[in-house]
Amino acid sequence: MLAPSVHPLHRTGGYLYGEVWLARHVRVLVTGGAGFIGANLLYHWAERHPEDELATLDALTYAGHLESIRPLLDSGRIRFVHGDIADPAVVREAVRGIDTIVHLAAESHVDRSIEAPAPFVRTNVVGTQVLLDAARASDVRRFHHVSTDEVFGSLPLEDRETRFTATTPYDPRSPYSATKAGADHLVRAYLHTYGLPVTISNCGNNYGPYQHPEKLVPKAITRLLNGQQVPLYGDGRNVRDWIFVGDHCRALDLIVQQGRTGSTYLIAGEGGHSNRELVGKILAVLGLGEERIEYVADRPGHDLRYALDASPSLLELGWRPQVGFEEGLTATIEWYRSRRDWWEPLAAPERAGR
Ligand SMILES: NC(=O)c1ccc[n+]([C@@H]2O[C@H](COP(=O)([O-])OP(=O)(O)OC[C@H]3O[C@@H](n4cnc5c(N)ncnc54)[C@H](O)[C@@H]3O)[C@@H](O)[C@H]2O)c1
View (cartoon, rainbow, N blue to C red):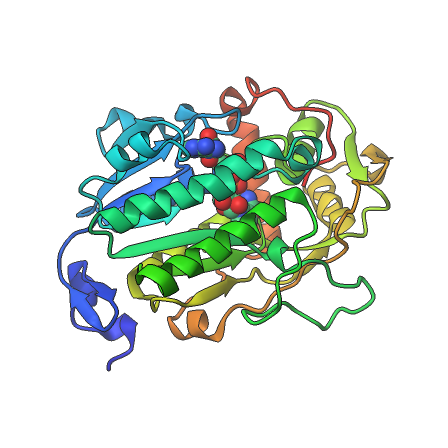
């Protein structure tokens, strides 16, 4: 078979389901499209696949904002369904006529999961099961589930070599990551039990436009722009794999189109950075000093280090992160500088970030 990038049908908007290229447009449902990654994915998809029909299902929790996708709504480019993915009637309706589901809707903030796990179980586990059932009952040809590297647990700080791979055993340690792990297991179970054509991806920490200011990168940027201190957990040495959201969206696009049913794809950024390094870079771009950091009591059970290798099967599809850390952070800072209208109405709670 020809490599995907030179496949003769690739340019016609064709899609690979199993081994079969379908040269036609698809009808895509993105769940959680009013959230951070969902909104970025909808813009990506609308631009790259003008022939495809797009819909999103979102409950518009505190984390969902229609303003994030306003141009797509106003132009009629996407169909918006307001509702809860744990509500079977709403989900059945949203899935009607859809052939591709990209599932992002979730409760996503670790600190909130520590304070109140119940909504995480309901949305991330029950909601995923309800969506899987609706996908089974309709003619869905691809169910892609977006998950996180946090399902694999925590690596020691001193060991900078070991990385998560698709075969690393699950070891979730926060209510958030436990519910995401539960969802991943359900998705795999629906392939093995019912033959639902699923794929899964696990990604590191995203940053970029439209991220709620409760998360570390936008929290640091918006607080600094407002002349405030940046709260940092513990000693700030915790390491995360950072990826620009646009790079994540390109990987999702490839996996949805060309991924193999039943496969898990790890989507890695360009490397790990400690929270302290991350905030240091933001301070440097803004021309500010480290005295603007305020160290606060650590998060309970704070995972030390996440690091993952991008799946060889994803690299074979031609994917590489394209946006370097400094470049991505600088672009993100510029975006928040110019979009006070977007983030100022969102109350930033006094937490230290993800
Ligand atoms: N942000 C990251 O760094 C990251 C990394 C890896 C994986 N992920 C995963 O990617 C997905 C999206 O993350 P995000 O950062 O964009 O999250 P987000 O919190 O910004 O957005 C979540 C969206 O889901 C919606 N939602 C929440 N509960 C819902 C429900 N019951 N029914 C319907 N919609 C509901 C919210 O309204 C919001 O629009 C999540 O599944 C998350 O676990 C995120």
